[in-house]
Length: 85
Image 1: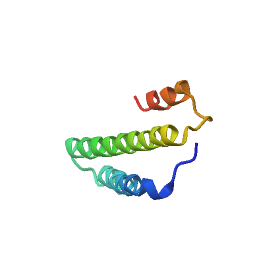
Image 2 (image 1 turned 90 degrees about the vertical axis):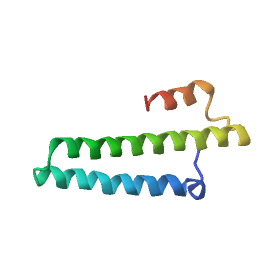
Image 3 (image 1 turned 120 degrees about the vertical axis):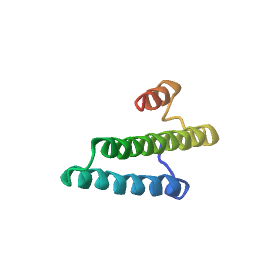
Image 4 (image 1 turned 60 degrees about the vertical axis):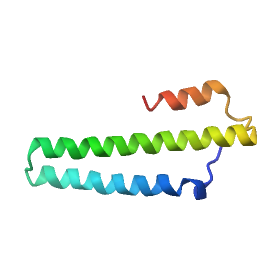
């Protein structure tokens, strides 16, 4: 199953934001910032990545249903979904 990049523009934007947030975490650690601030920022990165992953899977599921993609069966889709848990 190949994903349509045009449909994933919001996901790509979310991943770019997460990349910036992760850079901020690294910078905060290098600057010796407060642990609470670092962990809060790291949690934001983690949540952004989770949401991006779920959006990618949702798009893939939609494409499988609409296009009746025979390359992915229910078990494969379930395995992908659970890999984010």
